[in-house]
Image (cartoon, rainbow, N blue to C red):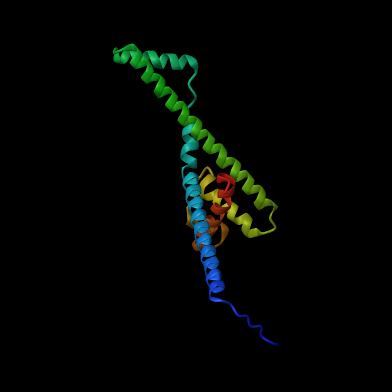
Length: 179
């Protein structure tokens, strides 16, 4: 077989080198972005149980409770009535806003996990199904499981559990963060 040979000018070589450098930089940027998405996803998942439990323990204030809280602040402080009522209103709004944000986070994670479960169930890969189970056991199950327990449940090594959780978080990040 005859080997083809091409002659390139220095300018063409420089252009090729520039294109290769740009591509390498794009790949580095994408990898950093993927790693950041996985980090954000893991952080959200790590707080899932705590936030969900706090939502279950707290209820939204009724209008009567809001009025009672305002007057309780006024009675306790007996300062300038308007300042006290304004502070009470701010505190109530702050608590309500936090509850709304937390509720939104929980709903977002639940929706992302439902989509990921559907993807895993539709997959013919047992590995994909196992990754979903591992992620669910690690972060979502009512009872928290550590890596060792998950490895024993799935009959795999702890190293594989860590790898699978990383891959599953990368997949979940697409549903959770839209990236």
